[in-house]
Length: 507
Image (cartoon, rainbow, N blue to C red):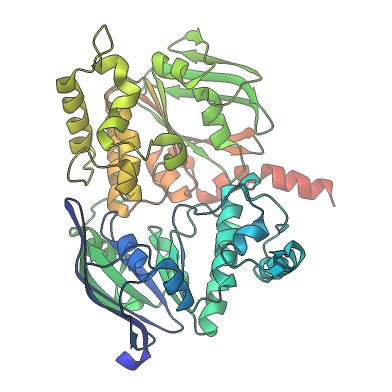
């Protein structure tokens, strides 16, 4: 491909953070009207490279050319936007207290006589949202929307700026299948208009639907750039991780033991209705269902985050009372939450502090002083066991990649003698190798006789890892399948029971 067709050229880019060389002589090229998949493990440098292109970070060294013109000095977010670059971050970067329209026009507000022209902003926002087939009113407060809807608003905001270079960092991580199809249709339309799209995703199965070329990074270095069709999925994965992944869903068989957790007739608000389930020692119970089925709400109710209207929870045959997360932790039930940054981490604290925080009862003496030796052993073991990539345990959790942040959330529970571990979407937004490590961790817990409750939106994952699967729809358990009999068709049939009922009632 000739250079004159490139609208982005990043040559010999270097970037170092304290103790970490994030980018080491990386080059990246992008053409108009193409979708370039930027792939690599968590911590490979993908997001750092794109944050330099969008002006969030400044490069230490290297050249950037946009539309054939060299960028003088450092890019800033405003300068990059003016040059036609927009980025949709993996972690939503919106103002929850503002309306949808106000978020879309943030920084580019429409004024009339020195005042915000909210009517015109709402009108234009409605036009943008309708063009994307997004059924959201522009006057809606953003924070009242589901995460998936907030994600679509962020996409609308990027498109409002008429960007010619659009960076999408894990754009489908919180979207439903229907919304993903809408996004892909939009991407194809943008391609025909000459928009260049950088697509970062760990859902490799998505690539075949939209991607033209692939750039792969590993450990902050450029590895290869090629046409997507020229590379098999196995080759892509081996380039990403530097080795061959022998098994996508590793699992071990353990002998079914006695029941460890029983939830009976649990009700909690509108999304948890008469839910009953059982988890056995050494078993992974998968919880499947479509977005909005009530899976996350069920885990939050069990863990004591949300108020329970009624229902019973038994642990090892004994009735227990859980009114807050601390009650659950003391009983031996722990939760790895869906939203790691909001609910699982203190991002302004170090990794050491995050791992130690829920375990102070273990590492403190009688008068509340932390035993530094115990703390160090605990933190070092968590980092080693989960292969968390970081220079030292003193770095802030916010500085880690999404996958390594997820590992820290998991790692803080490893020191406890937990009896039941609840994983809510633990592999969302992390790479193939990191996913396999999470699966290995679940298998280790199985071998130790711990009960695992595993929520996932990815059906191949839920079938590959679980021993038994329950399916939820409209806040209820609508079906149960053993691993040997599970199929995507059967799971989907149970997952749409409410939808089918609704269709029949409206005929």
